[in-house]
Image 1 (spheres, rainbow, N blue to C red):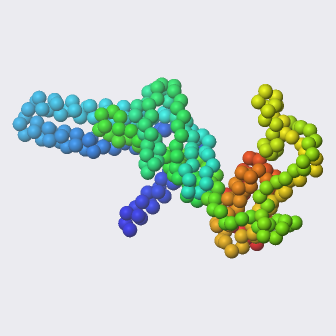
Image 2: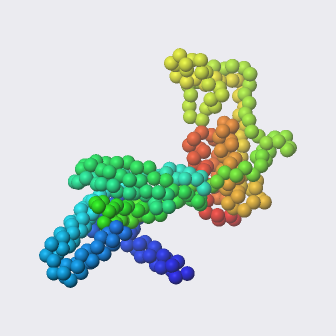
Image 3: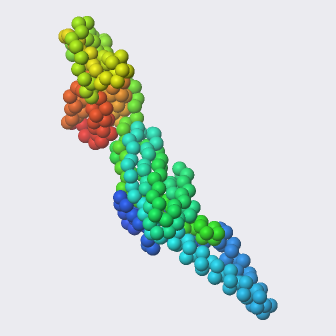
Amino acid sequence: MIRERIRQRWEKWLAVRIRPVNSVTLEQKRIFIFLSRTGLGYLVLLTILLAMAINYQNNLIFGLTFWLFSLLLVVIFHTYANFSGLELQAGAASTAFAGDVAKFTLFLRSHSRERVAIQVGWPEQGLQTVWLKPGEERQLELRHPAEERGLYRPPRLRLESHFPLALLRTWSWVQLDWKALVYPKPYWPGDIPPQAGDQEGTAVTAQSWGDDFAGFHQYQPGDSLRRAYWRAYAKGLPLLIMDHAESIEQEIWLDWNALPALGIEPRLSGLCAWVLHCEQEDVLYGLRLPGTEFPPHKGDRHRDACLKALALFNGAVP
């Protein structure tokens, strides 16, 4: 209980001190330095040597003790310099389904000096070790689980280093302004209910065209690749789509009210699975949500728009 309260206060203090930003340059107020375990042992050794020097009035031990202490002071300077001036910038964040891993792009820039053995990442996911030359820019891909749908912000990023000599531990917490769009986790709720005009008890899952060939037209986004003229495309010609007279392409409506027995999150998961299924089957489909409607269409843009609406659904049901 006490540990949890201390952790909450620590997180609150960090939230006030470290604000989400798109780009940040490490400076004095963002860099923390303390003795590592090796450094604590080193300090104990200095204390013992100093006590021996005082007890025996030995100038050689005095000299060794002060030389080792001066070495520690030099290490503090190099430890700070290894972090100071390092620039971090948030890149793109990938989409993901709830429960999967979201990917985040990070840019590191060293403008003036070399950066040695800097570890970057989230401690629970493992840290990546980075070395930068003066003036070098490095792009990293970081991953973090996204448990819930919506706009997901990963926790604060940790930078850590024990350079040089591992006597000191240097670290910094950075909150970059990443936002990953997390879709509902797909869960198949059963066959899509029959649409108006379909035979009762059947679901619309396919499309049909007439048998009379009516020519070609150049491929446009949303056209079915089942009617592509691959032979001409293999010869280097543009991708052509075969037209058929009296072509009929059925439309499917994915309706929120088609899953009345489920709660909000299971409904969204079911609709998400239906959207992916319809896109895979290459059929026209529309989506109806409370207060939102997407007319029947298909293609990557339509799929992404439907999935985004499911991810950002606020739960307000009239």
